[in-house]
Amino acid sequence: MLIDSHIHLDAAEFDEDRVAVIEQARAAGVGGFVVPAVEVGNFAAVRALAGSRKDCCYALGIHPLYVMAAAMDDLDRLDQALAEGGMVAVGEIGLDHFVTDSDPARQLEFFVAQLRLARRHDLPVILHVRRAVDPILKQLRRIGVRGGIAHAFNGSRQQAQMFIDLGFKLGFGGAMSFEGSTRIRALAASLPLESIVLETDAPDIAPAWGQGARNMPANLPRYAELLAALRGIGVDEVAEATSRNASSVLGGWLPG
Image 1: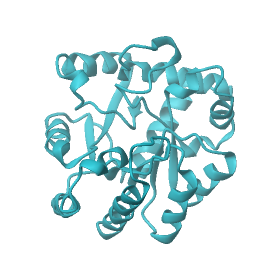
Image 2: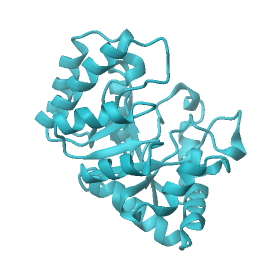
Image 3: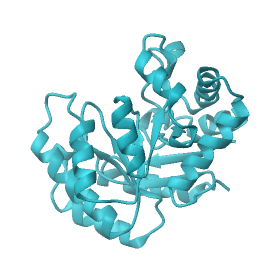
Image 4: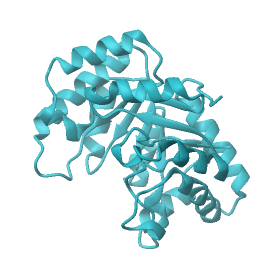
């Protein structure tokens, strides 16, 4: 069984065929799905999706690319939702220094506040780290949380070890499928297997074989095959290890 440790199943791109998409992935060997929120407005959707399916769990958070549209009292609403329980993590939260139309200071304000909420509620975090690995690590060292997942990791070997030392797993997915992604492939091949989780980020981050199309959770088994080939091990070992890693860092959650 494989666990997709990061997938936006609530996204509008899946509105017309969500159940069929999930069942296609299950038929391919994906047994569990971790669905992170991106704004207060979709908290109810991810909670309802996870509540309706034993193979789904959810996280609540405000994504760095959504903070410009967020109100400060959204943090209070997140705090209240976390107090109600049921989620496996705070996420998707973090920083994004790739985009140019988002205020870095506001991103940082929301990120720090959400780290503090994660610590208060003793929850791991699911991190968005695009072009922002060092400032994220700085805040993690300052505001200790219960580990989590660095989603779509694309940092250095040294940065990867820093995350691992802080109790984090590193997410690998579609970027591995590009032959030109030499650094990502080298990390996937050489990092300790117990530090890696697999993800699709569907409907985003389409693989090399699906450019221009909607990314699908059914691609996850091919990511597992690629990771196995890069490491020179069996795909069953990859599936077992990455699913165990996802479960362990998310409080022991396992799909029903």
